[in-house]
Every structure is written in structure tokens, then in C-alpha cells.
Length: 82
Picture 1 (cartoon, rainbow, N blue to C red):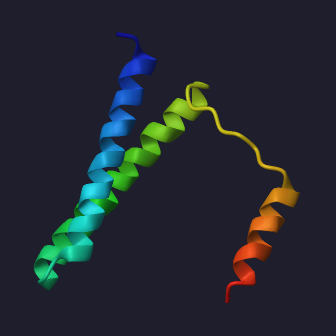
Picture 2 (picture 1 turned 180 degrees about the vertical axis):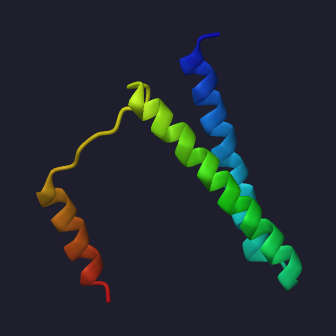
């Protein structure tokens, strides 16, 4: 298995972990449990960010630029819902 494949799998796993910790913090019933999940989420988000940056640096994570007109259209759509 190549490094790119390993990094992609790690990124998918950490994204799933972040999702679990997010829901754990949202659904927690005590302050201690909420704090534990929130701290774990923040740590996981830091790891996810480092993985993403490394992959982007190596050209393994491609992003797509969006035209400003499309961004403006979406902004207007949601601004009109207020």
C-alpha cells in the first residue's frame, strides 16, 4: 500500500472519529462527559488538520475553486431566508 492510500484511509478514519465525538458532545448529559467529548473532538480536529495539510502539500488532496458568482448566489439565497 502506498503512502497516499494510507493517508487517505487515516483521513477517513479521523473524520469518522470527529463525527462520533461531535455527537457525543452534543448528546452528553453531564458537564464532565461533555468536556471529555469536546476535548477529544478538538484533539481529533487537530490531527485531521495536520493530515489534510500534509496531503495538500504533497498534492494528494485536490480542492476545486468555486467561481465568486456561485458563492454570491448561495449567499443571496440564504440571506433571503432570514
